[in-house]
Length: 237
Image 1: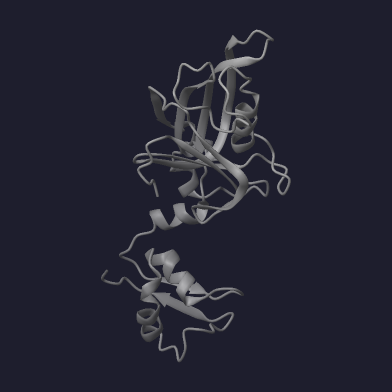
Image 2: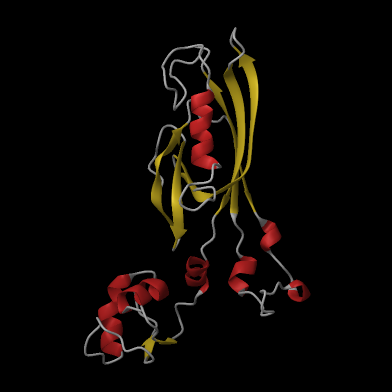
């Protein structure tokens, strides 16, 4: 969740699942020197498709209705990286805190946090953006740098950075959001299923596992028999 940070912070992660980023990248945090004056928020409306245009998987089967109507949030922002001495604090990631030296180290850190492929996945990291009540986890899909000032030896000391972040979508979380709480669901237990995890999925809360076990007359909630069926009724929350 957003932590009310006074400075906009970007954190890089190697993994994303169940709506949450995990495995933070070592040294993968970048805090803006100056907060952006403006942030543009939007939604990826191109994900919406109509009837005959319904997309299909490689096997020819229609994709889930949930994914075609869910609109990902997009954030566009611009900010300054400045080491001229005009700003009291230094850019994040500088090796030496000396005004007038190159901002290369700061830009390299920013690239690592946002677009540089990680060694583990060989893909750019998942990025968490936090600032006040603003919070989004996604992938950077646009990144540009405009160097606007140089020192006497030609090293850049000021740059304007523009980047766009598009929300990462987790199909399991979307499915939960679109499920009705007023119907009974019946599932067939497969390997790895646990009552606690299934309650978290269906009710968005794992604490209902005892009520579900009692409803299904289960002697234990710990070991579900593979191939058996379990009912998940509407429960008062």
